Length: 172
Image (cartoon, rainbow, N blue to C red; front, side):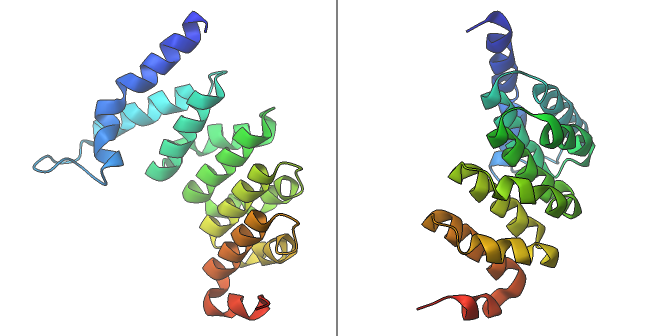
């Protein structure tokens, strides 16, 4: 492990006290949310997206997506377009679905054709979060995937968009 990776992991760990209220579902009891603290966290996490460590990138993507950090949309889009690790690209797509759902459909298609099952499942998760009816044709196609987990993820997309009507296409 090189020194930069160690520093980056330390940076992420040092954010834990600031992230704790988010992880617990809101500000700590008796304390008002601190907008300035959130901005500091967001800026640090955006910086973590530039790290070469995929673990740090994935952690930052997860938190930024859950925070719906609009400020992170551009750096996340950059990862979707240019990251060499397809799993990280798929994680970025899931984060983008929480921040800018309309940006997901046009980028999910290539990941749905990926050979890695986990990448296909993450692409479907992004479509599910976006709830964009334009993603239904891709979900229907993925419903015929050889992997049962991909088929289940495709069903989740259909259920998120079509609600009860999604079950009509399922064989008993």
